[in-house]
Amino acid sequence: MSTFQYVLIPANTSALPITKTGSTAGGLEKDELVQNAKEYFFQQSDASKHVKALKNASPEQRTELAEQFKKQPSNANNPHLHKLSNEQILQLLESTHATPSCEIIALTIPTRGNGYQAVSMYISQFTDGMSLNKTASGIVLACGHGLPEAAGQKQPGIYGDVFVGRAKDDEAGDEWKRLDFTPDDLLPNSSWIQVARTPGGGGGTGGGSSAAAPSLSGSVMQQLRLGGDETDNATLTDTTLTIEEEEDLGYTWDQTDDEVEVKFKCDASTKGKDVRVQFARTSLKVQVKGETLVDGKIGGSVVVDDCTYTLQDEGTGRELCIVLGKLETGLLWGRPVVAR
Image 1 (cartoon, rainbow, N blue to C red):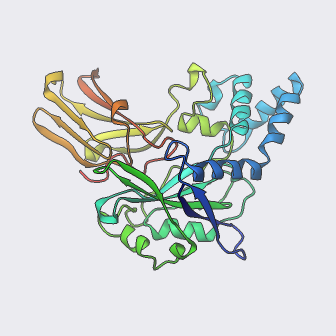
Image 2 (tube, one colour):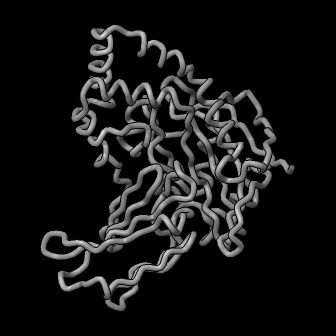
């Protein structure tokens, strides 16, 4: 059984990064780094006490808690939230607090330029009251990304303790495995950071785009914005967050924890036989009537069998809708197509 190293970066600036060791036995599906990060943030947030308090509350107290949550400044103008009943809100709060989870920021996506090495940061959803992690925020910026907004915080950034790890994700060899990531890799002059900022290096664009969607607190907002799967309520089916609209590139897109949806406008005469879509683990090719709309790297890895497309009427024209099933669920893509 082999092992790998990853790093815990404390938010406390006086504390040094801590090297952690994990087993590779679980592979991608039972990745020990992800499991350990989720459990760490769960214990750190004291979430179990919140669940117990909600379950033991009287009907009157539960109603009051739901109404107070809706009136919070960060929730007051959310139209999706106000479509839910008080009981639905409380059920989502309970499920969010009861399930260990974390958010994943893709510092680099695997490309030929970086040797198909992905570096990811694992952060807590529970940002209220946490200190700014200056080291982690600096790494996000160094990789060419903008800083995400954080719920309950006045300035963008990464808050609280975070984990950082590396993996090799080689489409050609169909290989995914954990690689070592040590405190030395956190230095600004580290080779992987330098590569990330170069064309094809897998990092951001130089500060304009965020590495992930806003870091959300551990609340119903995570379900509303990212399409969480801990509820069966039909009212949540249309509450995914549109991360970015790219009309100038010919498509719009949004994402949930599990899927990325990309939509192309087509003229009214477009038929199914005019469309050709080729899915690969880390690339996508789209042709309509012989014109290539996309042919290049995508923002993450997908399960090819979970990818589909449909052609449907939309207004006076037609719309080609492509759904990409994420290989690593919960990993937020910075954009659907990295290179066209």
